[in-house]
Image 1 (cartoon, rainbow, N blue to C red):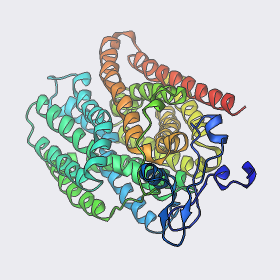
Image 2: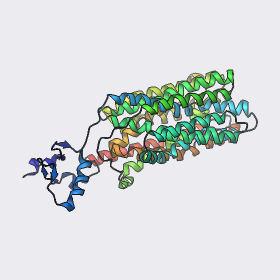
Image 3: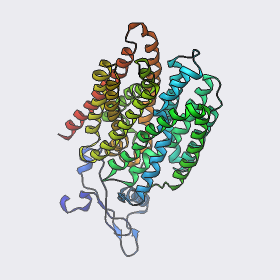
Image 4: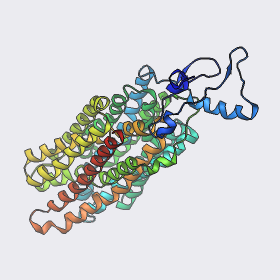
Length: 467
């Protein structure tokens, strides 16, 4: 029988029930493997048993399980999963984007004269770093214990961190509670939200994952205003306690409604050889430098606004608008990702963040200019973090999502300690320059340029491989 008449030539397999299924070939299969005809498994339709020899039966059954493919529903209960994962992102990562309000309060009021910006920024950095660096650990725990037990433990830890932080009387108390404990809890909570929606969608995967990531942008807006208004009215201690109660109640309800969807009867393990893939390594390089830059504006915009004569309310407004622009960027990226692909979206996003810092923020010291910077930076920042799951699913397959998405956040988390703390040191050391934030701005912008170059390299390499 010729290759064109052989069903295995098209990736068809015949399971034991006689139903023909389609196997999608991985883009990492070599040309000889992908194009060579596969020998179909002989099937006895009357008895339902394999006619292959006994010593080959187990191996063939295992291969059959891997080859059978059940397409995601691209909707249905998947949309409920999307809403629940949106809420997890809202409560796990949203408060991190609003930490600038806490930082301004801790430095200028609660611990005035006792600590520097660099020291207090470590609280937010520890939170983000723990959340990101533990991404791989969270992914492996979810594979081992399931996508319900792990995030429930995360929600309890996150809520406990905020509650204990409300009793802090020293900066190091906050480093351990609002920093480390909340970061660990967020790590166990947010990864399922980043992974599970991709299991339910294929054609609309970009829209689904982008919608989930809107939770961070919406959370940044809401938590910034929530913290700013209530810290003055009821104290920072009660703001943290209310946050603890809200997170515990609503995140627990969301997790109980989340279900997974498995496209293959036997889940494939990530191929460790993929770790040597040039596109993956380059993408991880972009992740590291993104980690250095991404939090700096959100941590320092409120203080920067006050230093250039803008009220604390105006600084909080700019931070909220930046988070709102991040929300818009996530939405636009979700809408266009399925049409242009994650690489093109990332190119546009990194171009926006780089130019906003180096061409807008470094040349302005007015309310309007700072607002313009917040909008443009927010658009790019929001689009970047919607494409992680889509990029991994496109190049490495859905089954690799827990490990490779966790790896992305881990590498990004390794960059966080080099971001706001060092930016704070630069700020303190360069105040006598007359333009104290110039060094901070340059330090924020240059790593984004490096990340942009890395994504350009991915695009060039992808086009070269396709040629």
